[in-house]
Amino acid sequence: MNHLLCGLAANPALPPELVDRLLTLALKEAGAEPECERDYADELLRDLAGRTDLRRDQVRALAAYEEGTAVSLAYHGTLTAADLDPVSTPYAAVALIDEGRGHPEWPRLLAAHPDSGIRWKLASCPGLPPDVVDLLAADPDVEVVVEVALCTDSPVTARLALHPDPRVRCAVASNHATPLEAVVALAEDPELTLRWALSERTDLPQALYARLAADPLPGVRAAYARNPGIGQELIRVLAADPENQVRRAVAEHPHVPLDLLTELVVGDRAAWNALPRIAAATPAELTELAGSRHAAVRMLVARRRDLPPHLRDALAVDPAAAVARAVAPHPGLPEELLRSMVARHGAQVLAAVAANPDASGPLLEYLTQHRPGVRSVFKEVAKHPHATGPALLACLADRTSRPLAAAHPALPPEAITGLLADEDRWVAEEAAGNPSLPRAVMVELMP
Image 1 (cartoon, rainbow, N blue to C red):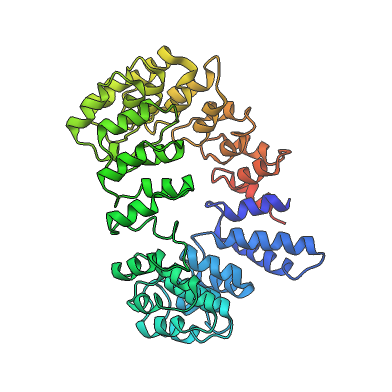
Image 2: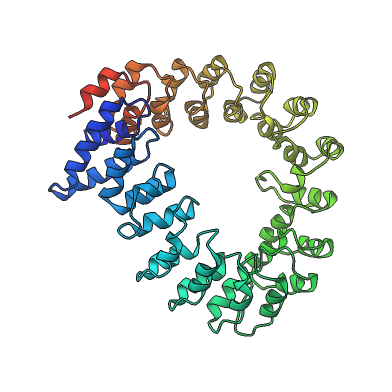
C-alpha cells in the first residue's frame, strides 16, 4: 500500500482534499517507529514536495519538516524567500540564492556562516555581490576558494591566479571569466598540469592549443579536437590521429571542413549522433550532402530535425534503412511516407517511426501489431502522446514498457485500476500516479 500512496502523492489529478490527507499522514508517520515507516514517510513527503499545486501553508509545512525537502521545494520553484528563515535552514536559503530568488541580504549573512559546506555551496551561486565574492575568495577553507575560482565571473580571478595553492590556480585556469593573459601565464606554471583545465577555453593562442593537443592521453587530445577555438591546421593534424576517439572528436568540431568530415564519417562505422557542422550547414551544403553516394553521410543529414520538406521527404524514401531510420522521427513527415517506410524496411525502422511526434493513434496501433515485432517499439509507443488504449494495452505485455504504459493517461481506467495490484511495485506506483485513475479509486486507496 505504501508505494501506491507515493504514486498518488505525485498524481497531478489528486483532489486537494486528498493532498491534505496525505500530507497530514506523512507528517504524522515521519516521527513514527519502526524506522521503515519513517523511510516510507520521507519518500511520501518527497513526492508531495514535487507537486505544483501546493498551497503556501502546505509548502511551509513541508519545508519545516526537513531541510533536504526545503531545498527540493526551492529548486522546484514552490518555496519563496518569505517561506523560510536563512539561519535555521541555510541550505534552502542558498538554493534560493542559486535560483536568483533569495533575499538580497542573505549572501552576506551566509558568507560568514560557521559551516564551510554552506560557504562552499554559496561560492558556486551566480550573481553574488562583489563584496561577498571578495570575502569568499579570502575564506580560510581552501575548498571554498577553489569553488570561487572555478565559478565566479568577478575580476577576482586575476588575483586568485597568484594564489599559493595550486588547486586554486588550476580552478582559475578552468574559469572562462579569467583574463587570457592570466591563463597564458598559468599555462607556464611548472606546478600545474592543465591538460584538462583549458580544454574548453576558445580564446587561447594556436601555439598553446598545439602544445596542449599533443598530450599523450587520447582523451585529452579528443577534448581539444572538439574545441571550437582550434584552427584548421590543427584540425587536420588531429584528424590523422591514430586513436578513434580523437578522430571522432574532430568530426564533432563545429568548423570541420565538409570534405574532411566526409572522410572521417565514411572511414568509421560509429553510430554518429547529430554533428555541429551538419547543424550549421547551409541549404546548398545540405542538398549536396543528401546526394552523397555514401549512406553514412546521407544519414547525418537525415538526423537534422529542421530539414526543408522536399529534402526530408526525399530522405524518407532512401534505399538505405539506416538513412530512413534516421529521418523517421522528423516532425511533419506525412503518414503515407511513414507507412511506406515500414513496408520497405520493416523491423529496422519500426521504433524510429514510433518516435515520430506526428505519428497517429492508428499508426501506433499498427506498429505494435507488426510481425516480426521489435521490443523498442513498445517503449516508444508507451510514452507517445498520441498512443491509444489498444496500443497501450499491447505495450503492457513488454516488461520494460509496462511502467510507461501504466502512467499513460490514455490507458483505459479499468486497466489502470487492475495494475494497482501488479507484482512489479514500479508498475503499480506509476498506475497510482496516472491522472486517469478514477477518483473513487483514489479515495479507496487512502488510509
